[in-house]
Length: 420
Image 1 (cartoon, rainbow, N blue to C red):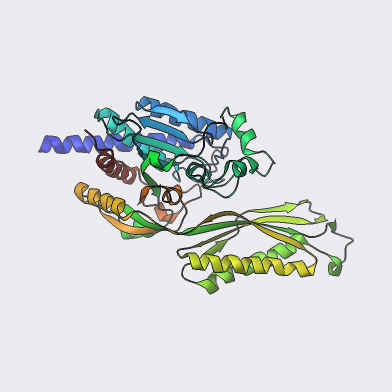
Image 2 (image 1 turned 135 degrees about the horizontal axis):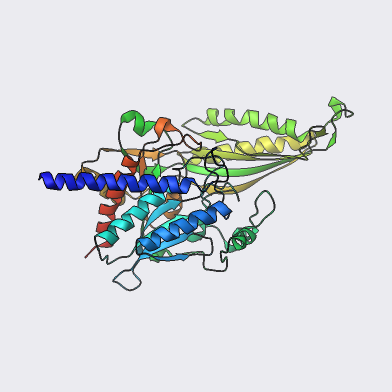
């Protein structure tokens, strides 16, 4: 018994070391060294990261391919022709000046599950397939969840091609620049996916405060993202009297200052955020004639989101009577999602079998898992985030908790792939 315990302990140490090394390796691929992870989709940092991930997939004996969105897949061959895959993964893009764990932690956990399949020479009946998804954050092209939405067919080919970043570069142009082929198929038939599993850092304080290493996610909050444009009239900062100005930035500030009250009035955990603002012409001595800003609305119930969207539109439209042109374009709408109860029960069963404490938890952030829940059975795990911090350089999750996730997903994947 002692020898078995030592082997398990040694295995855990090696797994933790491997996870830590990969987290550190991927953190080097950032446009802002020393100031967090900035890895925008189809950037040179994206290319360096995808090459690293593809190399790992091949090291773990997976067959590698990319689709017309730039999502990366590593597949372990199946024994049943055209059998649907058990898909495990997450995203590898980041917010500007974000952390090293949001997204990549889930990709690394998925890779380590594949490594265990390879090391133990397992022969699955249903294929195990690892996926590294693009543009979950929406930091470059807006909206978010682009890789999963494209796969699920909720982002059309036409809409994908029309997307541009703040410099006017299209998705197609950006893909071509790093050698990706946008003409490859994007949508994936639901029949080819048996299950989707995703591990993610919690991005909140609950698990750490409860001292529980694993959260089994039961529901994911609904999300809407709007892009609002307010147009006024430019003028000289010194010669235009205050009572004759049509200042787009001042009006935008008035709108934004009223948004929190809409969420507070709605209640039930509804939140609203403006995180991105572009001012034109952006000169210190010029009255701004146009502002484009984001509005992010989230709630656990769809009726709350719908009511707040309506109120936001009414607020924005009210300024048209004051000489401004306003519009609000909906970039993303994802209703709240309840994840598959059977997969959730299986995750809890394996936590118990492995002696890993867990609790049920809901997600206040959006994830690719919510997109896949429309086309297949989905299960999701959270691991604790230090001090609940995320989307910042201080983001941190313990590799020992990630190693727990590897072992849970490994056992679940063996069940779902029906290993011989």
